[in-house]
Structure formats: structure tokens, C-alpha cells
Length: 270
Length: 270
Image 1 (cartoon, each protein chain N blue to C red):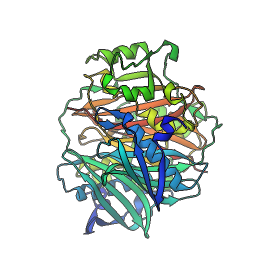
Image 2 (cartoon, chains in turn blue, yellow):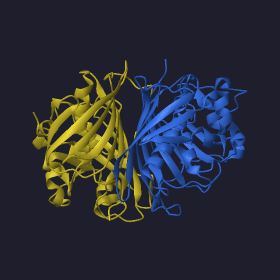
Image 3 (spheres, each protein chain N blue to C red):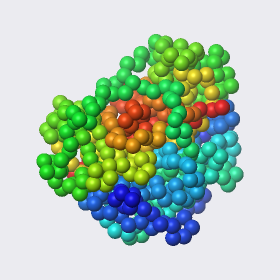
């Protein structure tokens, strides 16, 4: 079992009631990374749905409070168990207060399906041409997290992250994978998707000085079962205004298939 | 009061408990339009939040069952009343079964804020150059709905809707407004946003034969307070595969500001 699999383990302790031990190694600043929390909630939702071959295909989360390392609980309720889709409502609690509340649609998925239509993918240089975000150079305060999730940025966007300016565009491209220390790939590559899709620095870090940017809402959809290996990412924003910004992230697997797409609305920290 | 304002009225009948009278005029085929249902839920959430100047800034919904005209109930629960954001969980019931469950983040909004960044808008011809989707020509079965929401399509995308083919792209552009019969604009232009963002035919109608396409999940974010008047729209899809498709819709007001952005995951009907 990789460290990631172990850190996202949930244990059923009653009807719709799970416990987890949150790993402080996923802290970004003073709050646990939202993608890590989504992975924990996804595991509880899949167990509660009792459909062993089903996957979380559409997940929407509202983030209420920051999470810390230590014990936590998950409440999971099946809202509807349909023929195609089972919908589960999940809430993560810590010290009896809700941290994250979400709704997850679960369904079977044909891993080999050929798309009827796929939009033109953006250009992302191969991982060998990208720069690893190395905490010895930047983001030393998040070294534990960057030890868990390897991030490689295209030369152009690595520059943006280092020296953001108002003339520049909130657009980040590169590759992300579970770190070599964690085995490089999780047992179940679909479980890495929620972490990967929210593991990057806020996309406004390419536009404004680097800052804490709490997610208000994040929805992500799984579109294909990923191959093992690093995932290519493209993160961008359409509008940054009045302290709010949107961030859209797409992930492709090594076969060039869109495996996940997310959008979040977040606040610019003060 | 316009017909739309009246059709989305909710009445508080107890703590976190509202009633509504759903208007069968918003049916698309055999199911009430999801945008109309979101508008009803939004009104209940805003009442429950008890913040008169706040707006629904981020709303995510999972659609469980089709709705019909007639009485319905809304359960609304405040998950967290924070300084900046109040988060409300809402569920719409009909005949004691949940139809739609959602999470709505509510906050104040500076209508006059100038964006720090806005991406290049796509080209959408002015409304005078667009074709109205006229139920006498197409979509006669949804004439009541099209009497409530006027839809104007760019010449290129009106063609696509009429004669979809696999060589074509799921991309629709034009303008949408509350119908002249309904007064052209609602009392509160922000309340039209959830209806407008889900009023268009499924974007895959520009790619595949026109069909029923049930929404599984839809999230939309409000980014600015719209001016009165028609809203320009751009709808597109990134991937259509294995019976699932994503649809992203942006709306701009007459001042050219991005006022709302949505993404949904939906099924292709059989």
C-alpha cells in the first residue's frame, strides 16, 4: 500500500459513518489540501454506494473550513440508488464541525470507450522538458506536500510562477504524478484524480503575488479511466474580479485522453 | 410581477421548509427544465440565508429525478454562516421524492468591480444578426418553454442545430433573454442566470441527432451582476464519450462582462 492509499483510508464504523486519520503531510500552509480531502470523501462515497465496479464520475464540493492533520469523520448518505447512477452526499467533520460537504454521482465506466468527439488538446511539452517544482528552490513551506505530489511545469509557465506580473496570463501547464517516494502510482489510478486536480498552486499565482487562495467550490468530472503514469495538466482562469477567481483544470493521461476536468471558484487570500 | 417571478416563488411554511407551485410551462419534453428548478431552489436558499444583499455566487446541483408541473417542497439547511460566505444545502422534493439536491454559496458582490483579469471573449454576432429559435419551425414540442425563454442563434450555429453531422463541432453561440411575453427582464436579473444557463438545447444537438439529454450534475458561478437586457451565450463541449458529455456555458451581459459560467455533465438520451 502506498502512503497515499494509507492516508486516504476510511473505516466504516456504523451506518453511513466512517472514520479517517488525516495526514498532516498534505498541508498547504495551515490547511489540508482540498484534493486530498476529496480523495478521502470519494473513498467513503464509493464504499457507501456498494457498487464495487463503479467510479466517482461527477463530484461537487463546497469547502467550509480548513482541515488539519488528525482524526476526522465522514457522514455518507445515498440520496438515490438508480440503475445507472448512485448519488451519495458526503460531509467531512473534524471536531464535530463540517469541513467539506459534497455530492458524488457514481456510475460504471467503459475504460476502453473511444470518444465520439474530443476537442483539440492544448500544447503541453513532454515531462522531460519541464521543470520540477522543487521545494529547495520555491515553496519550502510546502515541502511535505511537494514530497507527496511531484509537479513539473513547462518552461514558460515555470517562469510565470517565479515572476508573476499583471501582463501575464493565468495559465499553467505541465505534468503531475504521485511522488516516487509514494510509489509513483497509487493502487487505484482513479483515486489520484481528485488529488491531482487540486494539487497545483492557485492559477492566479501566475498573475498576482503568490498567496493563500481558499477554494469555495470545486466540481470535477472523471471522463476516462487513466493509464498509470504522470498526468498532463492545463490550468487556467477566465475571470479574476472582486477577490474571486475561477480555475479550470484538465488532466490527460499518457495516452492523450482527457481523464478529468474540474472547475473551482476560489477567493484571493489577503 | 413577471410570469417567471411568479413561477419561481417559494413560500416559507416552517423552519427550513418551503413550498412552491411548479409551472408545467417550463417542461422540456416530459421533464421540467433544470434551470427553472435551479431558480426555484436559489430563491429558497437566499431566503434561508437571511442576507438580503447577498447573491448565489456558486451553486452545484445533482439531478436525481425529472420534475413535473404541480406542488413541490424545498428543504433548506444552512451548513455554515460565515463572515464572507453562507453555505446552504437545498433539496427539491415532489411526491416525497428528492428531484434535485444542491449546495449554494451565498455572498455579497460588488456589481461595479472591474476585473483584474478577463480572458479574451469569443466572437458572438449581435442579436440582430441571429436567428430566433422559433417553435413554429423547430422544437414545436417545446413551444411553451420557448415562449418563456427567447433564444437567438448565430447563423453558423443555427445551421448546426438544424443539420448536425459528425464533422461538426459542439459549439453554440447567440443570445438568450426572458421572453417579451414575460416582460423581457425579470424583476431581479440575477435570478434569470440559472434559467438562462440551462435553457439551451443540449450542446451535443450540434453534433448528434437531437435527443433528450438528462443533466447529472450542473455547477454555475455568478461572476458579475448582469445589466438588464439579453445575455450573450457560448456553449461548447470538450469530450463526448461512452454516453456522457460535458457542456460548458458562459454568459455575458450587454456591457460585455462575463456574468455567469457553468459546466454540466450529462447523459446522451437513448
